Image (tube, rainbow over all chains, first blue to last red; front, side, top):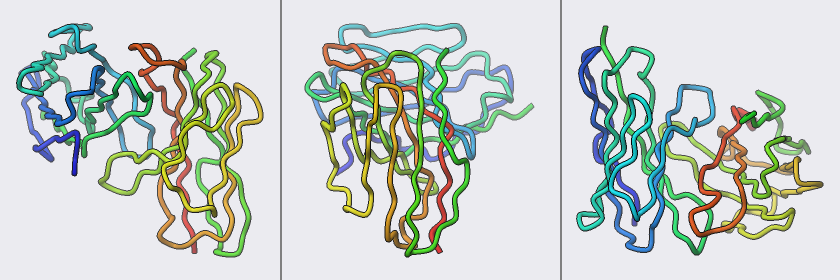
Length: 112
Length: 116
């Protein structure tokens, strides 16, 4: 059973517009959430994270929102740039273990 | 420096070969990880080392043998692999400990392994 779900395998956005990537989770013990970006043939690159005690964390063009009651988080990228085209993975962790549980990823394509 | 290095970048090995993958970090992290990633799938955790001791083994077959010689190095010894073991093998490191510390894992570029 998937504990972290990214239901959209792909997303296409025009350059300059907002990209919104969604992630749902089922395990209420998760207390830390992360987003990673991955280019082909490279390792995932850490983007941004959020603790369960917050509902928003912002870093430049990237903002992560957490809705604990809905067990849902989202990554907003604004404005989107062609260089943002990659696969984005949502990941979650709980205080009892340090290992990350990854979603299946969403492939973002930003069109010039 | 947030770099995790992995060698080799690519490896082709036969089913009877013995080879090793290497990973190195100099961020002072005391937790290191091995993941396996197949095409179009998320990374799957294999092993976790915390303070140079194996803390998690996700029921990985014994043909994969991890080793952590010191706090900066992590090896994965491979022996008698199967073609279905072909994948991208990723190493990661983080600070150790719970309570919101150490969850940011930094990944290396991976080793693309092909078993023939």
